[in-house]
Structure formats: structure tokens, C-alpha cells
Length: 603
Image 1 (cartoon, rainbow, N blue to C red):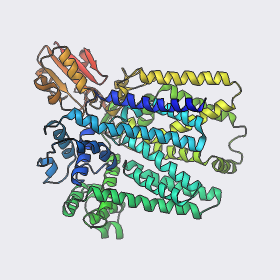
Image 2: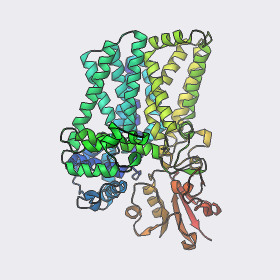
Image 3: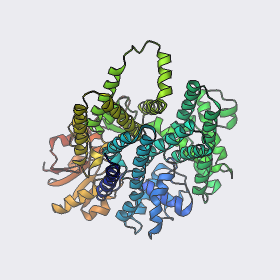
Image 4: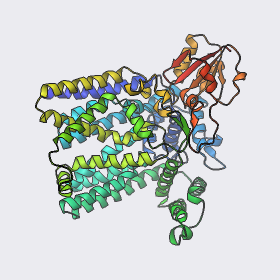
């Protein structure tokens, strides 16, 4: 392919992603996490006070809020959820987010459009670094194929349009790893500085990327053992860690500049009150602990102690968010999966949702690549395994690094109880894509029958592109042929895999088109039904007696509460279930964007 044609193809793919993302998001109402993220980011930039939403780092929220500073917006500063006289509680951020969008005289659709625009640009930047990573280490052919696979990933397209931290996390992984590997290979001052800054940026995108720190430790150790060189790798690692702390300290310092130290101390104490056994002292938890629980409590006591100290309180606030993220991951989240409802999570959750939420053509492609590599192994793997493994790492350190990250993140995800969506796996997407592209190009260049192999690849790529484009604009609802596509995905999983509140505006259009005078709604998401439906809206919830519904009424139920009200209780789950089983006697008369089911109650 000519150089000019390559540039046109590359530009076309980036432009396609931008067009698909921006136009598919216009009619999406706010998802569950967007109002708190938007109002929090706006408060950080406007007031330099980070009392809201500390369980997520600030950078994505700052980017989303940046265009909002140029709009004339009203902020509910006198509201109880901003003042928080009794302390910070999780519902404050959701309540204030709703009031900022819908009850302060602002235009919520305008806010959403401008807040989502930087997220779409961040998605493009993520794609650019996937392309750059692949081109730097593996060449242009791999980079172009990786860019194609990125461009037609329904999960990236779905979540790259929303004000959430997940695509930011994917970007953080590829950014930090790219510069760390460059610094290991060529430890110049420039590369080391870039490595540290990139690591710091990654930690400002999502707290789960703290896993990059042990990942980089392991890479450094392996490099030392394999290449018999220790001075430069240690210099790269130590410098990167120091710059990470510096970057976090600077950014958090700006975010909490007007956050009173005494209030930060109070809020931190309240937030960490239940962390690992409850309040104690530094002496009992860190100096002379008498139990494992006391040792686990030690980080919380250190963060509390530092939270009102002038120089280190920015790092204390970062530490607070990190501890909240750990606590959330271990605590779980009530959700529906494969007919069950549980808060404890399932070990097969992430493998299953990854299997059904990415295109089947992509899965076939990486399986073909693995099979080809397996067939290329001529000697039994048990003969001289240490020598062969060491030799492989020496010749393929970048591939080894990506595979190691996939192993670490997958193992951590499977162990986690926080099973709320394939979006939590987005940090593995860049390297899964690059490794698949690298293996595919190696396969094409090594196989004898190139014409047949190229035809197979073309069919798979075309299949993936068509399957993704076909579901526009409902990328969030994408599911592959294994489960029967988006029409059937609700039977297996809900929440951000299908139903995140994005179809409320589409429900409004359906109600207006069908001249419905009143509709009962059990809604899951970040939108305000009263704002969109007005006097036609009547609140409903699953545990209400169905006899309260007048005959001839319309009932709309989001897929998340619907399936949660039909599923069986999982092991140890003691909350009410089965309250929507009575709807089995009715067939939906409409399905709004795959996520809201509308029933006509005629009995």
C-alpha cells in the first residue's frame, strides 16, 4: 500500500470513530455515573474543592468539565448535598449531580454534549497511542491492523462517549507502559522523565491502575535477570515512581486548594470509619499491631493523620480515594447475572461478559493466531523450559510485558467482587488488540498460502465491522452471536453491559409518538424522568403491589431492575427477589433501545 493511501486509511479510521461516537451519543440520556462525575469535575475546576466523588481520580472529570467553564451555568452551592453538614455520603454526589443538570436552570442536554466531547477526544487519543505503541515496537502493518480492531470495538465505542473513567484507564495503561518500555530500552533523561509523567497521569485516570506499580516492579526485575543489567533499570523505576508521586501531588494540590484542612480531616474520618475494623490509632495499627485486621487498618490511619497537614494533604486525599477503591472492589455490588442476583460476584463473570460483548470475529482471530503459534512450536515445551523462556523474553520483551499485564489484570478482575460491567476490563483492551494484530501479521507473513490467509482475515474484519456498525447508535447494548445479539443480552447480564439509563430520551419520543397520556416507569440511570416526561411520568418501583396499576395503564421498566426482580437469589444474598415475576404473564409491547421494556397492563 502506498504511503499516501496508508495515511488516508489511518485518518479515515480516526474520523470514523469520532463520527460514530459523537452522533451516537446525541440521543443518549445521562448514564448512572455521569451526573456525579460532571458535577464533581465542575466543582474541582470552579472552586478547587474536591469534596465530591473522591473515590475516582480527578483527571477525566476535569477534562469533561473544562468546556463547561465557558458556559453560563448555575451551581447549587447552597444545596444540602454540597454543604454536607453531617459529612460526605455516597448519595450526596448523585443528588447534587441531578440538581446541577435538571434543577438549577441549566440545559442538561447542552451540558452533556460539551462534557462528553472531551471524552470522545480522549478515545481518539487512546486509539492514537495504541497505533503508536504498535508502530514503534512492531511496525506499520501491525499498527494499522490494531487501529482497525480498535475502531470497531463496540465496548470502546460505547464507553468512549460517556463521562466515565474506563476508557481513560485503557489510555493510561498504553501511555504509561509505552514510555516505561522506551525508558528501559533507551534510558535517556528524556525517556525517564516521560515515563514518570506518564505513570503519574495514569494514576490520575483510574485507581485500578495502581496495578501498574507492581507491574513495573516485575518488568524491572525480569529485565535485570534476563539482560544482566541493574543500574539503568533501577534508575528508570525509581525515577518513574518519584515523578508519579510528584505529578499526583501537584494535580491534587490544585484540586483541594480551597478544601479546608479541618473539613478534609472530618470527611476522611467519616469516609474511612468502617475501613478494616473501624477507627484505631497509629500505635495499634502500624507500630504494634496485634492482629491482621489492625495491620489492614494501618493505611487508613496514616491517611487520616496526613489529611490536614499542609504539605502532604494532597497525597492524603489521593490515598483516601485509593482506599475507597479497594473497599469498593472487595465489597461488591448487587447485580443480575445468568439468572441470579448477588452482591458477592462470580468468578466466571468477566470471562463471560468479555466473551459475549466483543465481536465473535475478533475472538476467532486471536484463537486462530494462538493455534498457529502452538503449531509452530517444534520442540516439547518441557525440554529446557527455563532456557527457552529466558530466550523468548530476551527476543520478545515487549510481547512478554503485554502478556504479563493481561495476566495481572485478568487475575485481579476475576478475584474482584465488583461485577458491574465489561467496562472494568477496558485496561486489557489495548494490549489484547495489539497482540492480536501482531500475531495476525506474523501469521500472514509466515504462512505459505497467503491468498487464502488474506481472504480469511478480510472476511473476519468485514464481519466485525458490519456487526458493530449494524447496532449503531446502541453500542452499549452490543452482544455477539453467541447469545443471540443485543436482543437477548438482557437474559444474561444487565447494568452497564446493556442498561445504564441511556434510553430515557428515546422513551420520551416513543411516548410522544404514541400519544401516551401517562406512563409508570421504573428507571435505572442518571436521567431525570420528570424532566423528560413531565406530567406523563408516574413513578414505579419493583416492590410495589402490581394491583396498584390501573387496568389499561402503561408500565416501562429498565432492564436492570426488571432482571434483578426476576432473578433467583445467589449464595448468601438475603435481599428481596422475584418481585417482577408477575410480568412473565405479559409480553412487552415495545423495547426502547434494547434497555427499557414497555408493557400494557390489561388485566
